[in-house]
Image (cartoon, rainbow, N blue to C red; front, side, top):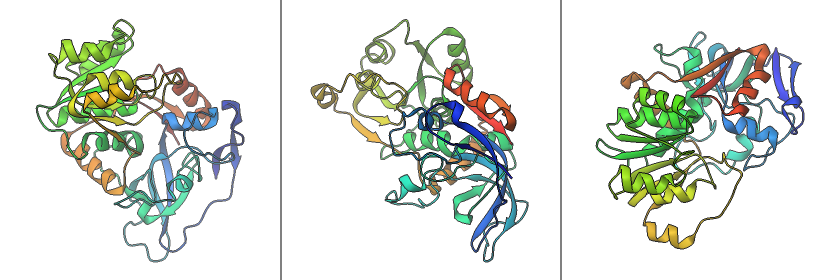
Length: 337
């Protein structure tokens, strides 16, 4: 079996292909023949030393995959050989509070991930992939899509007539546009240029703001686009460099959902700006297994097709990471195993 590992955490040069023994499923486990893996920014952040949590060298990267059950261990009842499945981002979070072991369990940073030809996991760590989605499409769901779903379905879930602000054209933001439109919301999106703006409009965005031209886009969204009201929800993927703009854009009682850490600049948050916004700030970490199951049903019922920027061959995995690093992509980057 071939598997990629980041032998060190210095640069993409540390990504190396290894020949390893084929794993065998034990009681309650399934062996998955992996067909496709998708990348997330955290996969890049780990090797570049930008990840917000602890990370170990020597691990197989990537949390998101789709494949076929190739063998089952004793006592497995949930799946049979031949079933199509996708990974759950948190393999041991089945509901309620997030487990205290989440960091140690995290694929690619605390435990071996999915960028390999096969992987053995608990039968509880995968869910069924609908027949309507390809392996490449299915591999995009576990992190980015579930994160977008969790952002839109908090204590005050998005409903028809609400307004959602998304930032950029990465995986989470694109899924947020698609899901928010499926829920009947008005979507305002920020981006860096006209080509990406056209893609966002084609996906359903009602208003697009070029943040290179409108640097104070938070004020613009609040005053010009929403008539002084503000948005109901901001899917905040930028991090410290964008959160103050997001706080400006949100309405009183609305939500700023903290997700990403794409930016390195950290000007800090003005306490009185945050206090006077009267907004709810909610930090999320993808979602639990039930959230993945709900997301899969929503995507299937709404007929949402995941947006895939480019598919790379397994032997070209390094190029896939380089594409992610360039930040030129729209949607998800997939490696076909």
